Image (cartoon, rainbow, N blue to C red; front, side, top):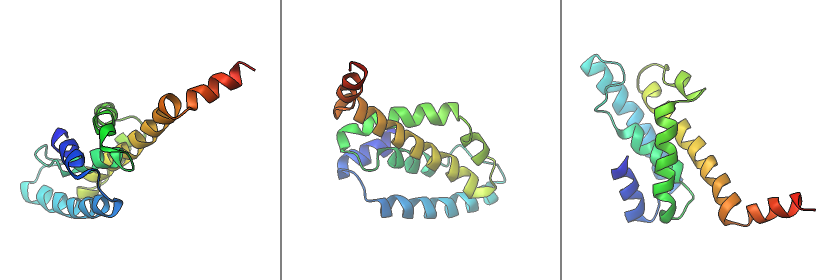
Length: 131
């Protein structure tokens, strides 16, 4: 995941179509690899982690990448509902889906944190509460 974060920073972010293309190609490749090695969700397949990290960081300046990675890793490790259920999908879809959805959740959390603490959100909240 750190390598994915460094790629994100080096390229100054990536367009959504690149993330989607890597997700599709990665799903197909993971499916074929899983069939070849006859093991479910082999740990050496890491393209799902890359796509999850990039999804978490999508739409943000590269300076947010480390925070996006951190949030994504927490979600990826804890696998809250419904991410754990997505992991049960068959083949490459199950390998990729939980990390993509974890990346989406991480992205939304990062947006909320950014708005709350850095874009005037906290001032708005405190101003509303103080009235």
